[in-house]
Length: 312
Picture 1 (cartoon, rainbow, N blue to C red):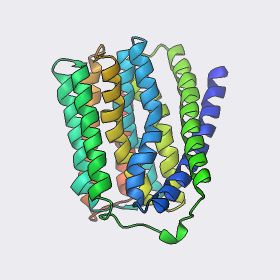
Picture 2 (picture 1 turned 45 degrees about the vertical axis):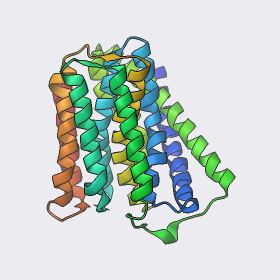
Picture 3 (picture 1 turned 180 degrees about the horizontal axis):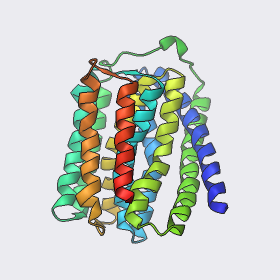
Picture 4 (picture 1 turned 120 degrees about the vertical axis):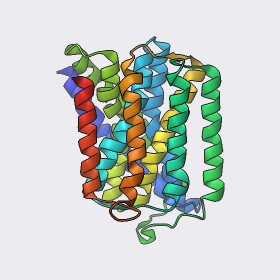
């Protein structure tokens, strides 16, 4: 009963947190005159990746490396398969040119870099974490310097300029609510999953990863409802980049992460690479630079298949 209460409270906090964070992100993009997709890939991605970072660091320090790795790999799969899938089923997204010139290539590069680091020696070491964090900073510098003028604003008439104190308040409240909600949701979900005797890795790539992807889902659905679609796409791509480079990078700098369950290397990591690659053809087929409900059904269908094979 307690686990179910945690899950419900966690979900409520995450939905409110997503709404507050979105308000702050839009206000911040207006205040700094930065395109909303850039804000989505920095501010929103940082805040929505906070649960993964907290969970991964705690899991690695507590001696549960598979929970730290599975959480991030599973979250990246859930972000693209479940979150993006549901988002485009609810409303189609017109994709910007920056998706294939910058965002998608960086996400693939980060995914392949992580694969190379972990696959052969089955361990993410301190120097590898430093390389990942340096790559993240290089990407952010490029994004803020060169992509700033490359992205057109969407629905500018819907923007609301908030006072600075309100923007800061929404940002803090949103981040805290997302973190607290994720903690409650994870505690409840892991409690339920452990009760049924599921392994640590399976819990990580399914239950925990869905739990820590709820902020992305909440922020993206609210973005679609409010027609802030530039933020919803940028947030998801950015979140995957942050999960790999920031979450695993920072965690492995603090303590090396060693693979314990081989299923992570023989199954999960290939699903993550597959989902990352799949987004590119879906964006161009059948209509160029557009994701519609059919693409959403394909993504959700692939995600359900992944969960089925992982659990069975």
